[in-house]
Image 1: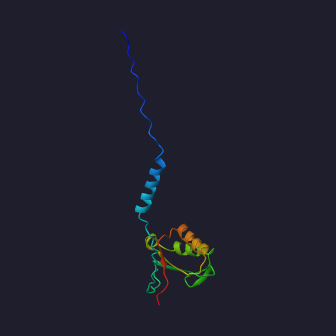
Image 2 (image 1 turned 90 degrees about the horizontal axis):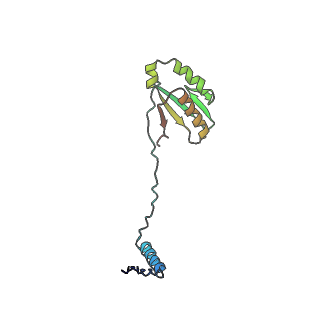
Image 3 (image 1 turned 180 degrees about the vertical axis):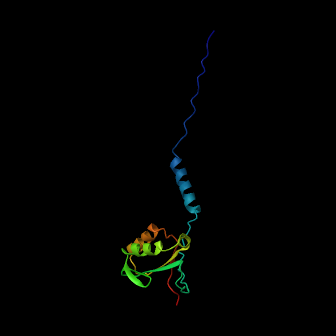
Length: 140
C-alpha cells in the first residue's frame, strides 16, 4: 500500500507594497476629521470683600503681617521669630473650650515675602491654632 503524502500548498504571501499608501491615506483621514479644541483663557478676577471689624473678642486673634516682615499682634509690633513666644503666652491663658473656638484672622500685605507668611503659618501650626481666616483686601 502506498502512503500518499499530503503536500500542503503554501498560501501566497500578502503583498506589502501598498502598505505605505494605506497608512498615508489613514493618516490623512484622521488629520482631516480630527477636531482641534481651542483653549480659551478664562480670566478670573479675585473678588474684593467688605468686612466689619469685629470687637476684640476672646475667640479671635488678629495678626497683621506687613511687607517689612514684622508682625503686629495686639497692637504691638514684633518680629516673626518672637511670634511663637507671644502667641504661646496668649494660648496658655485660655481654657480648652476657648482654645477649640479660637480663630486667627490673618491680614497680610500684598508685598509681603512668602517666607514671612510661611513662618507665621508654621508657628500657628506648632501651637495647634488651625482655624485661620485669610482676610482679603478691602473693596473701594
